[in-house]
Structure formats: structure tokens, C-alpha cells
Image (cartoon, rainbow, N blue to C red; front, side):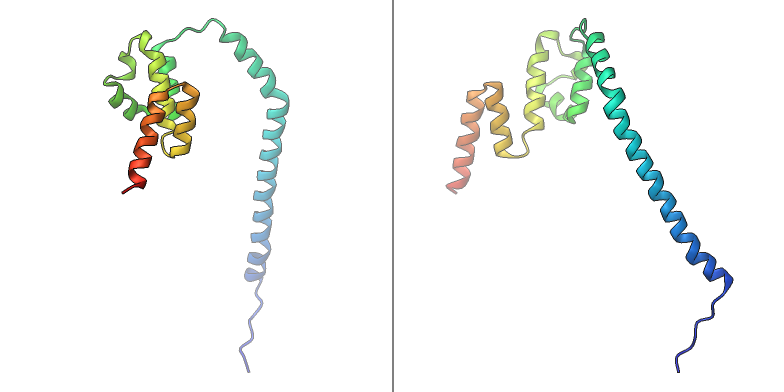
Length: 139
């Protein structure tokens, strides 16, 4: 005959308290999600319109370029390719740095890279990409 499990108050409390904590965590998660949805629906649109108004007078600065590069996660590689730290680039180099940063960000897949090169109007880069791809296929 199999041994019978003893029902103790401690084990009963454990069985009861675990689901209660789980429900509480689920309720907190639900509440956070609902709060985020409300914020996105009610607060975010007005906030973004205020930001648009606040940024009308912005000019290119090294800090703005640095923030963009950080957001694209291409900092070290961009500096290596540009042969300069982002902070030391001249303002006339900013468009080039932005274009290179975008290309870097989209260079992980050939089709994505080709699309970005096309959007930037960089025909020579697209031709180079095609010839490299063709050479690899013919090996």
C-alpha cells in the first residue's frame, strides 16, 4: 500500500500562498500594461507635439550626432570608418557620418543593405555589393 501524504497546515499554506502571489504579480503586470496604454493614448501625442515645437530651432551639433550614433549602435565602427571620433567631426562631415551610420546599421543582411544604399542614392555601393555577391556565388 502506498504511503499516504500527511496534510499539514504548513503545506496547505504553501499551496494557497503561491497562487496568491502569482495572481498579485499578474495583476501588477496587467496594471502596468494598462497604465502604459493610457500614457501612449493620452499623454504621448501631446508630449510629442511639444517636442516638435521645442526642436524647431535645433541645429546640428556634435552632441546631436553622438546621440544618433548611440541610438543606431554603430559608434566604434563608425569612428573607425570615418577615421575620427564623432565629437571631432566637422559639421560638413555630419551628413556623411549619418549616411555611414545608417549603412552600418543596415549592413547585416545583403537585401537590407541594398535597400538602404538605394534609399541613399549610392549607386556605386549597390554595384559593389552586387559584384561581391556574384563573385561569392560563382566560387
